Length: 313
Image (cartoon, rainbow, N blue to C red; front, side):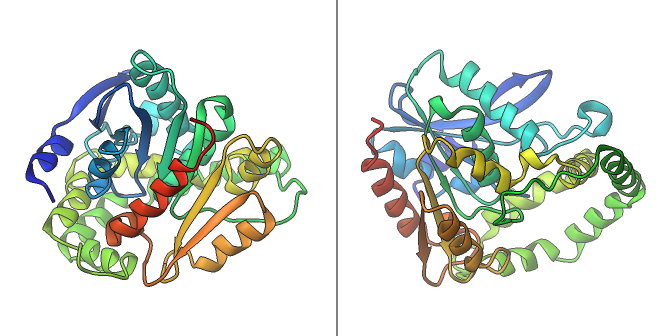
């Protein structure tokens, strides 16, 4: 990788979002096609180390930001923010577009996500249909249900369930769990499980995942995520969001899935594409959960060809 680019992506910009410090980077000129790269769970903006430069050389402004709770962004707990989930992260991205990108660029925005970042991108696309050019999700997490019947629980039971979830995670010893994870090589084991191709599991990758966990505020942020993601309303779950987006089909949607994904098997992507015929699916052979970093050449090519062929621009 180009050393100058490494310095560029590691050099942070900071944005104040609702009193929280949010870290972000950009590569490319502000007046080019804006792309926001959204990282997965446990990662950060630096996980796009092998992608941003590629797109910046192809008429794009490549933005990457640390979702609140991750990377170098603030790590608030339930007292500070209440909960962390894709609704909150979607609000963060929407405000980033309005406050950081819009003063310099009025064009439609492309959202590219990995795993959790894909869910955030999907959530944004539903609420910002007219501003999003396309979503590229690699892969898309969350339970996928093929029926259209609402699964919303009765409000009284939902409140009871959410209360139990909150109490459980308040007392669950996440501080001890995170300490053990960093001391016994669990992060590297997790990366080996996520990556089918091991070539890019290097010290840089291990550090970008490990350093945020070592911050004293990491456990409280993880607790807010566990509570927030476990108690979401149906309207912030992938199945509902896909049905909502399919009603208008305004936002072209590409799934890129590794056929060796151990976290979310590729049959999930096939089910989504079979049920939602407007969604396009690309299966990448011999790749795992993080195709953009495992096989960046293939990921970049597939993504760029999709963007290039859009009629939006």
